[in-house]
Length: 125
Image 1 (cartoon, rainbow, N blue to C red):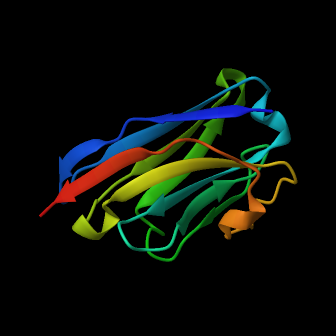
Image 2: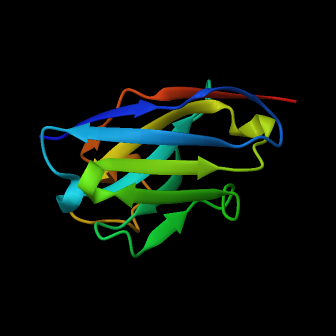
């Protein structure tokens, strides 16, 4: 079973950029599609982005399309989320997730098998 650890969160101002990392251990991520989700207080977990096993295909939630970029470095067993033009409404805990079935089109939390503990992103106005 792979273990996932997110990092890179923090407090930024609106319009700033931030890059999150998800470091995997225990197993190679080359058998997993990888996704990012976020959850704000009192809101449901929201799909942010996903990337296929090879990194060729990506999928984004409507609220981040054009601002966020997901990528992966399989040789480093790491996945990234580059976030640009951040808005206060992007404030949330961001989670990395793995899907054994290469489901890079999957947007529901239940479709992912393994989760990290999350990293807080706070965007001030």
